[in-house]
Image 1 (cartoon, rainbow, N blue to C red):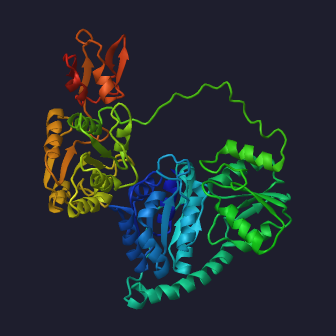
Image 2 (image 1 turned 180 degrees about the vertical axis):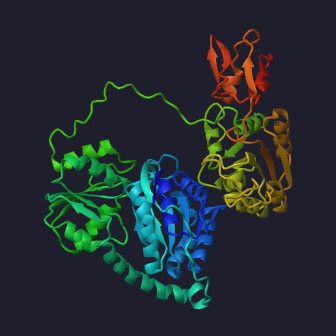
Image 3 (image 1 turned 90 degrees about the vertical axis):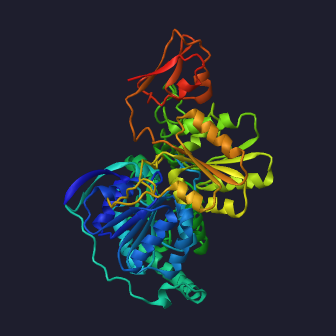
Length: 597
């Protein structure tokens, strides 16, 4: 055994490798991305690993491995589970042979997501077990337990870490080497593996009966614990338990109950843990899931216990919990004196505001600016998507009118076109997003005779989540030589009338490309192709000649590059930030900006 200091996502990965996982698939999405990257980093004999094109594909790849009796893990963030929900719901009915763990990382806050949805709700909806770790160490252990429970009950199971668990660091003891388990292989049986209504009907009844057994099994699970003996009890799960335990370490008399397996609810454990309790506080993030579960349990057994939490206004209804909220909420509930005061931070200076912004030299800035220039004076709708380029909504660019979910930019632009044919409908999507969920929208646009411009911002990476490869990069996680899949050829094959590929840093050519497409009817596309500045570094810098600068500040007012600022009424460039893209020099009417090596 060897000790490794890793983040929570790394602990999940090492736990899966320690369990002999045979296949790992997923799609990058903060806060889950580092799980697959860690699996790929460590030597793993016999373990196949891939970045799939989206979460649905990953779920289906992993399900086939589980049908073979192999251990499979699929990773995603909570909104990715929406994409993978179709196969997951059916998997719950069909079942698996080898252990299958679905890691769905929730994002309270939300810090980097569109929603604050709660995967515990999804687990209950799908009728499959969910494990809720409170620390990286628990994540390491729970993922191994999850494989065991999956195989015992022949069902996929969910591991549901949250952002603060995913990104915390801890030491875990792992084997010195990792080797995938041997497995039987796929045994053909159409009565089992081919889903039909009759099979679903029979298996649904089996699932409901089985889940009662799993709940009873979970009642003796090692990560469902209770300490203290007070009449008032705190029930917590996930990272909220860690905050509560930290605060109550000096108050061991307070009863603290941890629920590590929220579904199926470990009823016997909770009934025993609540003996002698008159009032309980549910301290949890996102939805009042445990609170509602306790209300049902207490009503079912006609217990005289008052339940408090989000539904009663004692716990904030949204956002993250933290150590401060644990102190405040629990002390108020428990009547602990002098505990609510905490540390006086009234005199502490406020941190500087740092709104998210496109990087200095980001080619997406040039793409947005080119479209803005081309559409000047014309009515146009700009439909954005999920990725770095969502930041195109910020001033002064102001080029993202809508952003709903991954892939929606292309299809929403069609809706605007059908409702207002006088306006130019334009969508923006990244190269990774195009492969993940954009192709269907393009086919829909051509099939339904939309009139729109599809802008693909191709920076040759999945930049927002950590520069993972995708089908257009020519490489995958198994170091297998693969052909780059051409976005242009896909667009043409789908029937797009005109496809123009242009370097967005060539401003004149980019403006001309957009104008040319705007003059044509039907579905057209402009591929703005330029590598991400975080991947391809440049030694070139731009500099302002203060003698020539007239202080018009057009370069600052029109593109909002963070490397540009004002000093003495004139523009200046921070050479520590500048990447030498040269976009600002193309705006300068007096030629005051030039490049230096």
